[in-house]
Amino acid sequence: MAKILVTGGLGYIGSHTVVELVAAGYEPVIVDDLSNSNIKILDQLSKIIGFKPAFHQFDLCDMEKLEKFVAAEPGIEGIIHFAAFKAVGESVKNPLKYYHTNIASLVNLLKVYKDKPADFVFSSSCTVYGQPDILPVTEDAPVKPAQSPYGNTKQIAEEILKDAVVSGDVKKVIALRYFNPVGAHESALIGELPNGVPQNLVPFITQTAIGKREKITVFGNDYNTKDGSCIRDYIHVVDLAKAHVAALKLMANNDFKGYDVFNLGTGNGNTVLEIIAAFENTTGVKLNYEIGPRREGDVEKVWGDVTKSANVLKWTAKLGIDVMMASAWEWEKYLSQNPS
Ligand code: NAD
Ligand code: WQD
Image (tube, rainbow, N blue to C red; front, side, top):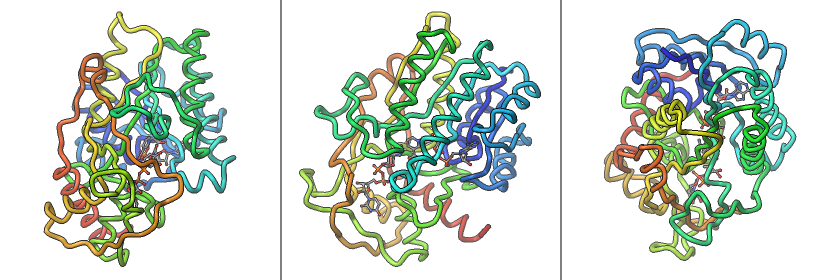
């Protein structure tokens, strides 16, 4: 059983990936400092996979603790690096927090595993494309100037990883550019834990539906799209998690060399109003929403070309919008019945 380090493994995407790693026969070792998670997630995760996975709580920016961890957990064959801060708005207000955590954690990991043969999977984002000139956007589309310090950390991280492959500090790297991850595990035991008022669409929808928020505002209906609201490529978090297993398998192949990057989306775009309608139809819950002004910094429309992921990574998303909405709703209901 190959031992895989999952940084941020108690977070939203990391926890779902731990489930898929175990299902595929890997042994996950989780590092998380709980800065954006809760220790309860470890128990929930254990219920799904049937055992308690190895877990180490510390901040990856702390080199001393990281070195101790590496000594205590020898034989790591792969690293999936999720740990990072991800709130776009907060990153504008507090850029140094983002540059510090998102960059230092990556550089520290690369340093401590420099002479060890661990393949590396990195969580990047479709945010690197900004507003693409051509849709669907392919991996070779130009990276546009970042709209936020958060987005910039993803661009810089991709550059760092490319440089580290050239220098030989790391042998094999796959950067995965996620589109918009939504939904939750079918058990409703793990899901997204938004910090404070959600910035993202689907948690805001489910919190409004459950009564935590009075109403949701649709940020603009005057865009150049079919109904005037923005278009995104929403992808179920379980599909996304499976792509990380596919990335490890691809790198285990002797033909894979160096650095590569893949889009992780469904290849389809949906408007905000379509997502709201899908939520209402799937759950039978009427949503209190209003049309408001545009949100600063939003791109009008983006969805991914997933041909390369299908052909090279041998991965495609399977779950549709209805499953995304239904599972997000089950998770919200679970949270309301089990307050932390
Ligand atoms: P998340 O906040 O739920 O998970 C991140 C986890 O990392 C948390 O559990 C947090 O406690 C932990 N963490 C943060 N800093 C740490 C540190 N210094 N040391 C140890 N642990 C630390 O976020 P997520 O949605 O699961 O995102 C995972 C990754 O995917 C991030 O890198 C994020 O930028 C990227 N990403 C997310 C989205 C999205 O919409 N969710 C989209 C594109 C890319
Ligand atoms: C989706 C759509 C909003 C909330 C962000 C990050 C990006 C990536 C994914 C990490 C947009 C609209 C939202 C609301 C709304 N994260 N909306 N009312 O903006 O595509 O991307 O998360 O890498 O970097 O920027 O996702 O979920 O915030 O918004 O109308 O209350 O929903 O305008 O069109 P976004 P989102």
